[in-house]
Image 1 (tube, rainbow, N blue to C red):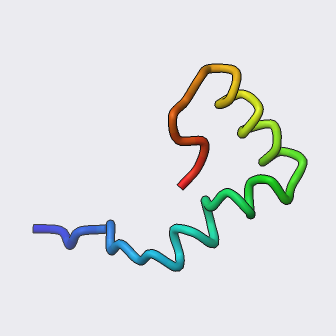
Image 2 (image 1 turned 60 degrees about the horizontal axis):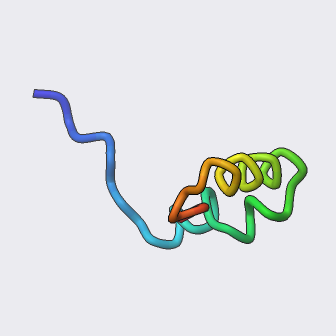
Length: 45
């Protein structure tokens, strides 16, 4: 039985996929823009 690969951590989740990280980069802003266009309730973590 292989070990589980998902070991959740709040800090890691936020610093990798958080709103501030996304909005800070060009590609991240594109992601947010497309998610806004699609009408997502949650733009990021």
